[in-house]
Length: 234
Image (tube, rainbow, N blue to C red; front, side):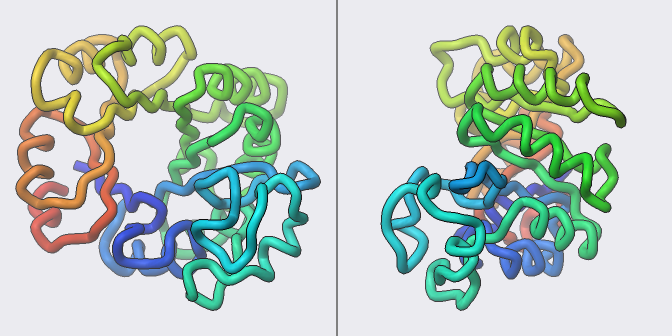
């Protein structure tokens, strides 16, 4: 059972910061999940929202700021700025963590592939996820167009109203990341495994719920907290 630190265990550390990546490793995570958007010049930067208002002392769209300006902001009173994806991959490599990169907008897909290709972290230790099928298709196309091993992808799904297994297969994914409630009842996990897809459920913050989801047969948990009770699941 893999434990993935959602935004670097977002309930325990300032989300999507280098400090959160480091503390996730210290807390025993196998991997860290981070969100990626494009800065003004197209550089992949690690921030969840389309604007910087919620998590920094700045305001306005991420896309209107340079990487340097974003780095100069203060994320959730941490004293750290918004990091680039390059910096996060380097930090994860130093800490022995795998990385799940959640692409929040299709336009940053190709630059994300370039960052993964340039990282010291082995490509096999990075996978890209997205709610956007178009983003996953762009990642696959950019991966095929550049030298190096294929980059694994995962389709993120929210609701039972769609078939995430079908979408994941259509996008050439190796995994599906469903909202955890959709894994508890029904045959989603079984169908995903039959299709050769790993299943990582998000987002957990309770050891009791984590055990229920783990018993459904998922391969990993994407969690906001690093609770001691998770240790028995790994």
